[in-house]
Length: 393
Image (cartoon, rainbow, N blue to C red; front, side, top):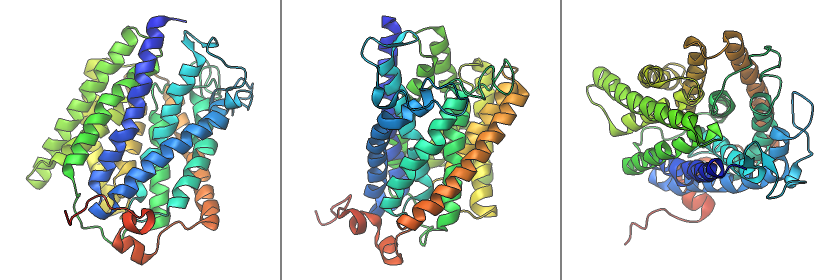
């Protein structure tokens, strides 16, 4: 065990959990109507709790078990069997590696929340998220990070896919799942109401930005120069994308909005995520600058041209950003073109199939969408019996 590595990954684990609770919850919560903000908080919080338990029981073993299959890790490490405080994973205690990866298993299905807010059934959220994490996310983790068939020595030869912190594993899978749920749900009945709290949105985005240092820097799994570079390029990409989004918005609409600028931040962070361990600061500046414009145009395409109500633009920001960043690894010569594009295609197809099957299956068990009255009145009081704000006081 290396003490410095262990100390850094303990901090990184806390930072990645901080991204979901409260970062993502505030970011998404501020974007919805006031009568739905608590439901967004509840979705994020409940998903964090449920994924933690499921990752302990099965998810970690499926992703990082010792099985010889290139498709899943088996169940030999379920419930951390045979693992104690002295068991190592590289230079880290394996229980710490388990905890670090658990925070990724939390935020990935939590990202999908943004596509279905204001109209989804709470039972559907829990059942779908749990099954999707186990059957879609965890196997993909094994394929890419757990020594599976997309990694080095797999179907692409000695040089497998390069995905440092989750452009494919996190952002592509969550983005595609979000888009598909939005299609099956149909549009909201109330789409013109502006974000009820842009301040929440900014605070949440700022928390995500800080937490992302653990997300990308921690993926080095060591306290060294590689982690420092990952943090540096992460920051540069986020800043560049924030500015390019704002400038592009000013050119197109005459005003640069605060909500738009911080959405650009998230686009820059998602785009640099897969490349953060493989590129330098100049490449990060280019990736971020392009991402701010590219993801904004993707928002316009999906929202206004294709007319899919992906409520908080999960696919346009996370999905497109993660795919773009994965491709840029090959553009800058840090990855194999066949491995990068082939892995995007394989994981994309698998995600679509599993997600559609789960939407249909879970839809038979519990309601996908709340009724019209509940949606109009808001999910906070109707579903959870609470209000975010006491306007009488």
